[in-house]
Structures are given as C-alpha cells and as structure tokens.
Length: 231
Image (cartoon, rainbow, N blue to C red; front, top):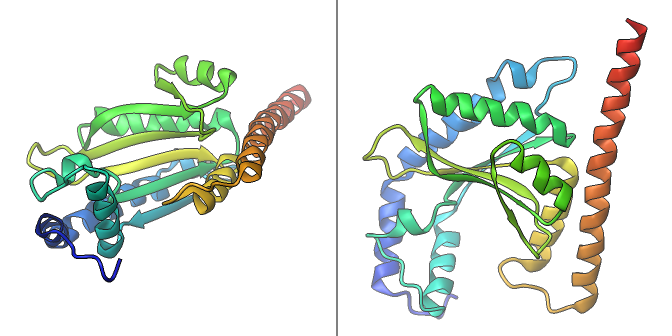
C-alpha cells in the first residue's frame, strides 16, 4: 500500500473525513452514552446489556478501504463518501440471550420516536437460521438470510438534522454471535480465507453458536419459571 499512488479523489475524501472528525466523535459518544446510561437496559441485578464496544474508523484504514474499492471499479469521492461508506463509526451492543433483544430493540425504537435520532436505513436482521428469522420477523424487522452464517442486527442512525452527514452503525448481537463474528473477521477480512477446512469449521461453529443462544434462552426461561413457582 505504501508504494501505491493514491488517487486525488481518495485523498480529498480522506481530508473531508478528517475535517468532520469532531462531528463523528460527538455523535459516537452520544450513542454510546445512550446505551451505557439507559436505566432499563442496565438495571441490576440482571442488566440486559452485557457490554458495549465502540469504534471510529482510522483515516488510514479508510484510505485502504477506498483504495480497495477503487481497484474494484467503485469510485468514492468527497461528494459521495458519506452516502457510500456508512460504517465510519459504530457501537456494538452485546447481550446474553436472544429474548433480551426485544427490550434493546424497544429502546432504540423509542429513541427514534422521541425525535432525537432518525433511521438512515431500515433496520435489518442478518441471519442464516430459520428460527431466528421468524423471531425477528415477529418483531417487524426486515430479515436477510446470509449464506456466510453471519448473524447480527444492524441499525443505521443519524441525528435528526437533514444537513447532518454523520451516520452511526449500531450492531446488536449475543455474546455467542460475537465470538463467531470475531473469529470470522480475523480470517475473512479484508481478504477471505481460501482454506476449505476453515470455511467448513466456521460453518460448524455457527451452528454451535445458534444452539448455544437457544440453550441460553431456555436456561433463563427455566430460571424465571422456577422463581415464579416459588412466589
């Protein structure tokens, strides 16, 4: 990458991003704090949110991404940067089992309804599992089946300001799904592994993850039922 001549359009796009850095940092902090301080999602002794992660795309990493896209024939400039690249900042919300997602989704929808945020894109659940697909569809969330075995719910939000170029990607997933995602990312980003064995093992792991998520739901459901009977 060091010896590659960077097209002027990409350099201009990076400069624009760096000039907008403060706006992105502010909105990222606001989204993170929303989840971190949300009363219902963090209520003890059993908080719904297990942990949070945030990310801010480094300008050098963005430059590499734009250069890869340029080589693929996709020319991204300062004029279309923010409409084409929507993962510049992001917050990842991790929880223990699938049923907890209902309350997380509810909190996000309430934030939208309050007028503070606007969906820049329609929320989407990405999954490969038929039962998970039904779960998300029952919550009126558009569901897309991925043959990559990737599982996560994606929201893209922006400030309620038509002139704002800032977009923040919110990913919601269970800890089981996070483990799979981190392993897959290590092997398949930015260049996919060519190992047939790794691909097969990732497929098997995804099924174990799905089973683990269901089992976690069953464990917590059994615990609630036991407590209710004692009362």
